[in-house]
Length: 155
Image (cartoon, rainbow, N blue to C red):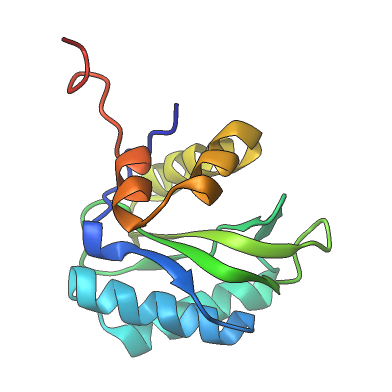
């Protein structure tokens, strides 16, 4: 079962996104994070682009985990994007990417950042999780998958 503990606002889940390159995708992520969490879109885009210069964050298997650190937040935040059509992202397997989970972590908390990255990478390594995310009908279904709470369903 998919479950991400990273803070994920329902408005930060985007499906059917029609983007044709990585730079447009990063700009969309910054815009969504700005609208969902009140972050500075220009600053966030700069940080995402700087991180990509260190090495592409295309994870393989059609997924990417763009990430950066950001001041003035107290916990990792996420933006999930399912693209309408996979794009070239310079992924480690040279494959195109259609599932993206952007991770924005507090600048001063490296441990939380690493835990969140590990969690998202486990999700994307699991073929069943990726199939569920690709097959989900709309953003609400994806949000439910990503925020599944065992306690909520344990009755």
